[in-house]
Image (tube, rainbow, N blue to C red; front, side, top):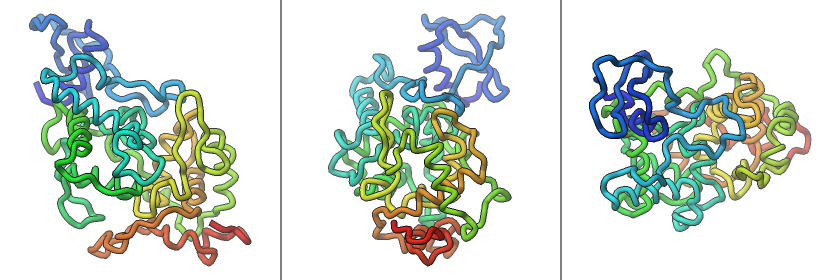
Length: 331
């Protein structure tokens, strides 16, 4: 039996203890029964349970977890269980649990929906097993801790926790818990599925911010507000999309096509996956046409000279750029 998603299956049996076998990605895996007894030889394949919350799930499922780190039996060592839970809490409320490293009003959960357990919304299930990995932006091999630190510095406009700091260790513990059962170096199929296809990418100079604003007001403003700062909903409050309390211009979300891929597949939460490639790109251009904090070390990115064509934030906030066609528009 392969290691592929044994952990997801193990955790799933907490919720679906009657299952004896499931089929995942075409392979059959055996789950232990609640008593720990061996399954019978007459295994039968049953319908595949959800390993991730579907990308099409709407706002009503925004707080749902398939793998609950606050459950009693997440780890046999209570000290490790405590760190896993702390990592989860940090991811959902860094302003409380990691305030010294955060420089804005965003959380990990603003982008990694359902605590990293939702398909097409930057899922974190299995991601720890993919590190270390080469990253073109850094032009070097990076560790999971490097990646976490990068999120703090860019998406949260703060500073990276030291590798041995409890905040870093707790997030490391949570991400590794979500990746138990994955083989080292294994890349789950659901990672990297938020891209706009190359053939569908609109040249940056042809994107119309005015059209993006109209689409934003129609599809995004009901939750994010006309000012982009987020409306306090009953189930959640979206983080700010621009301004001093949003991600800085070194974050992945500051790239037009990258943010557009996320918007296309994960937004709006009232009807995710219903926007076209063009609509998502226009909205992304509008969002990134606003002023936001500057990442101080941005010039060191892509040192091999392969800077992506959509990494153009530093030109978007100036009226001379084609994206800023609206006369008199000010960031």
